[in-house]
Image 1 (cartoon, rainbow, N blue to C red):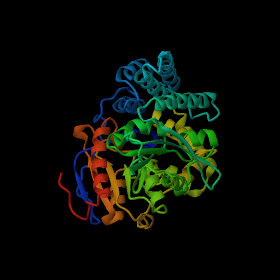
Image 2: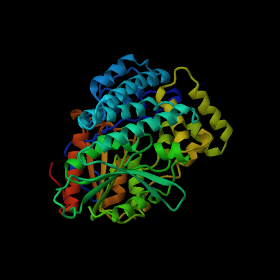
Image 3: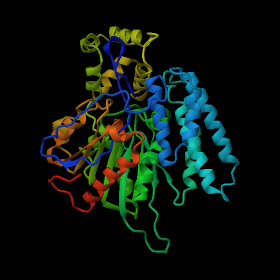
Image 4: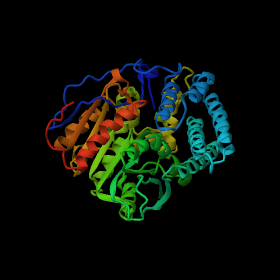
Length: 460
């Protein structure tokens, strides 16, 4: 989600994606002086609607990892009517259908690269087409688009030189965890594979694990490491297929993934990292408070409490209504803002996505459930491994100061990194600057895995 600097009733819910520069250092309970900005011009605006612009920037960024092509995305952007959800759907639906047909017209046995690329692009555009459709959870297009994007993605990963594996993991709590395992390329000499470092990565509030392959996975695999992604309750496939919203016990999602890795003969269990992006920057460290087989955690960007973030952005009268327990009045106030013709797309989408992803009946329950998933100093002290805490100089979705507070509470376990806007990486989760993000995070991880990190300052 991405909110601008102005908002009806003083509300503002913002989001973007950012990380980069080499400002890397171990923390001794203190965070260095940093300059956090709230610039609306740090990234070129592809649409006059700030939320549409942000998601289009994410789509363009997928090109870095082979998930899209800039010309294709810019063509859709040129046709989309700002703030019009159906226009957005139509243009990406047109694009995805064309790319899907192109992919299926290719003889994948003769030209696997060509077929794979177009299947990846089609999958991305199917995901984009449905992005603003969650206002109506029973909209049949949601199920159709999910199935279509999964089919294209599954076809694409089978055409990789080292094919990806589609996995479904059972849990003890009645839901299953969909995952993809991408093994690193190894020598085909008939010998047992080497046990390699492995990065587990989870998405956040609105992403999908298919996106993660392009934004994170290709860089991890380029290091010669294994990559595994997953989704849990509240996230894309689990929410749509199993009707389960976000849960506070996120370790119940991650532990089956770690259990699975223990069964493989190509995973070094002493070198397994857990990464979370955006809202996943809360979920990953939350899981690590109970799951202690992890060698390192990466919170990109550090996130503590969604409800507290909303408290700072919503007007005090609205917060007072919520705290009074007046469900009817709170819902009515949210709906009044939602129905305001001039209201920003970001607000409408955030409410729609929140109710859908937390699987609640109304905004009041969404707001309440958002407060049950959080990190505080006591919880963070339960983590036993080093934690990379990322912060974007122009990141508004994680809330100014949340990553910094996380780092302070973690103390010596934290490795803080501020990404800079002037080199294009200052927004939330390094949107568009994924190679910079990977350089910083994977270099740090390599040092952790090699036992070279310690409580000392690291030069730029």
